[in-house]
Image (tube, rainbow, N blue to C red; front, side, top):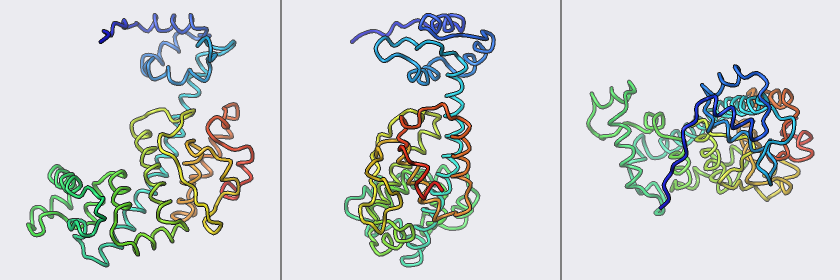
Length: 297
């Protein structure tokens, strides 16, 4: 195997390297300050859109402030998306917990018969047991102190400590099809579509939570749009890149419109976009007539 031997560069050396690649450093002290608090490695991922694809050098007249501007746009976009994802996550957890508990009792989740055979129930239960054991949430500590049967807390407590990824897999493998269909009906979606959306939004949530770049980046998971006319909420669905950030945002908008109609999610997105008209939104998957879509009105 090859040995990694890339040297560690000082801030001054990092600035010089950027100059050699053609980046215009206007205010060196300000640029040095940014590199001291936002690593060269992190900012490097925001420079690709400003480089020539062949030479990998910066195109003419690109400056450090433009790179920082893109970094800050990405940061603000993640704030807006993360807030909306929380709304979706809380809603799905509540719908699943309430529906299943009303039909099967507060501890429905500890019975493998309530899930499809394809669900990795043993792994799931091990995860829940570990989360409960390590939890410092007051309701769970209270339950552990006063009750020993069942050994795990009721589902509404569990929903507060499990991840979005876990709830998306739980929803996909729920054995009660009538409950799944009712939840999907609330969003005017088929169950297979909502399954897909939750997995895709969970991935986006993880990128936002770990401060990964989302601007000018494809999604690893592919969005599935409903094909039947009664479920369509975008006129030009066929024109959307299903691996784009725009595709996932459209799905989030649809869910938010059902969960919290007065949400500022859309207005905050539009405000951010309007304040950054120079960015390449088509590269992010936005269609030519995206503003004319009813969902964006």
